[in-house]
Image (cartoon, rainbow, N blue to C red; front, side, top):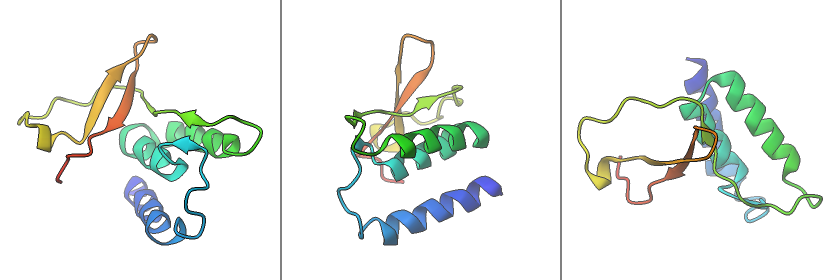
Length: 108
């Protein structure tokens, strides 16, 4: 319930308020997209921590660049494996965790 409320707040922010500062994020994916991916896939406390540190780093003192969110634990495999039914790609990193990369051909 709290997770869905926070995701709706992020949706409202992305829909209406990012038009004001379009292109001002120094990272890819943008800070709001990064937060949304964390809130969808990780615990709420972990999502708050990682989103806050990302927002604090999004300024002129840091270089920016590409930084995908890390998944804390794996979700069960989908029943239907079709490229259009996969929402995120999981890419393993060295620490045994997974980067979450959005599938742009997802239609769901």
